[in-house]
Image 1 (cartoon, rainbow, N blue to C red):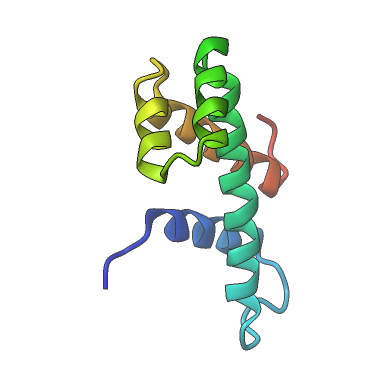
Image 2 (image 1 turned 90 degrees about the horizontal axis):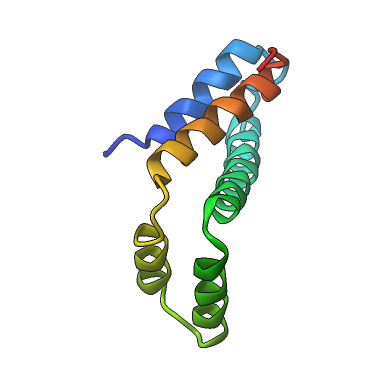
Length: 103
């Protein structure tokens, strides 16, 4: 089974947060799914905010035209932003907020 870095990241946050009741059946998985959804939404938002305006217009046109996921990923990759850097910064900011640490 291949490891999922996002799940590893979320599990590490949960271990540090030490929330009660996480070990009950199905609770941890539900919390992981919720955190993953919120984190991915924040990453998507951060990527959009980092994109140049003309690329956002092109993205909207592609989405309105029913573009495939691959087409959208290609446009984002060609937009000139460092997606990996934006993603990492967003994940670290999310972790700090989740754990209640100063950013």
